[in-house]
Image (cartoon, rainbow, N blue to C red):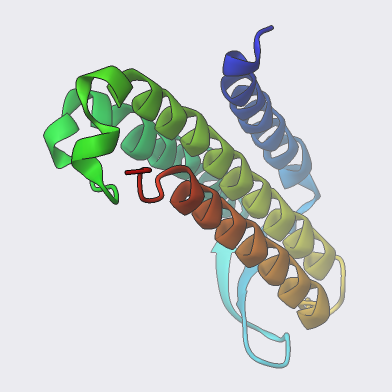
Length: 168
């Protein structure tokens, strides 16, 4: 596999793994799943196991696919709608192919991160549902959220560094 295919392979593998994980572990949930928790970790909203499973598949698979398509594929269809710093430079005919390839690959990495974040929140909800009464572990929730935000900031920084001001 060439390096240019790695983001696509990783994205597909992550989506498959996350979907499998959510479906395989959904049976471990109670019929009514606590899905929203207050500041102290106590549940204040519930869903059916089926509804929750569909929601998590949407959040863990469909949403990352949407993000990757919006960032990676739509610029190929609507290049005049691409919003980049120094857009005219980066989308000049001699650089357009490389720019669009980078956006598509970079979108796959964002999709991986989004999907893995959904899986981490699902894992956290599985843990919460095993307690009686269900209780969200706030410290783990905040840790997952912090790691996700740091990775998102790194993704944004990489994008800005890639499309910085061209050399004069």
